[in-house]
Length: 240
Image (cartoon, rainbow, N blue to C red; front, top):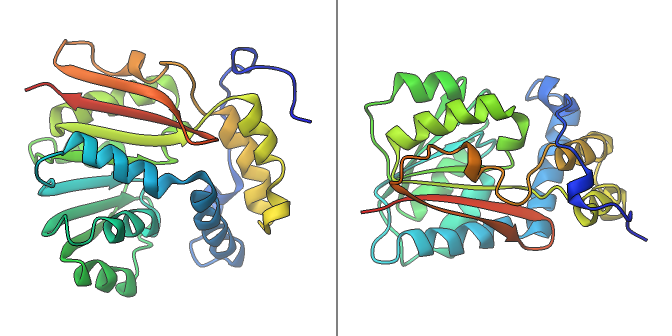
């Protein structure tokens, strides 16, 4: 039985996750990346991104996109494959503290006529350093919950100057998501993912918490809601 408390009873709390301190080539880090791909599949994040991107860009695909905290690029590769034949010539920059984008993944994108490059560095510094380099959209998959509200306010301010759209899919902070996060052993996840998943849910979002941190200048259309069984979707789209 799932716990009886509701999301309003769970105060958002941040705690260090084990995977954050692991070198990229550590066996536990490699296992956890495999687990994350499995978790993304169970949470349906590729489909959520496909539907959101089609909604934000109904007429023609974006020319340039940025994914922050991109990891190995696997989630966006799934998105690109689902959009194959409809979206071509998309230029993507992956920004992460670790460069995990393999040559094979780059080649897989190239087959779809997507050009990708990776930047190893802090996303806050990168956003500031490239403020004048405009992009159509900034994407984030399971990354925003790592940051405090103050950090998110800073990140959103930079993103609003840089992009015309911001799409993020995050853990939903509620009892059902928390219950699921405690059951990952049943789907074969390793000890790091099992440790980190409940922490991620407690740092996740509900209601309109992210919308309240986005710049309130009247030039944005904000969407924030439950997505799928365990996820929280945030979309900021510039009004034209």
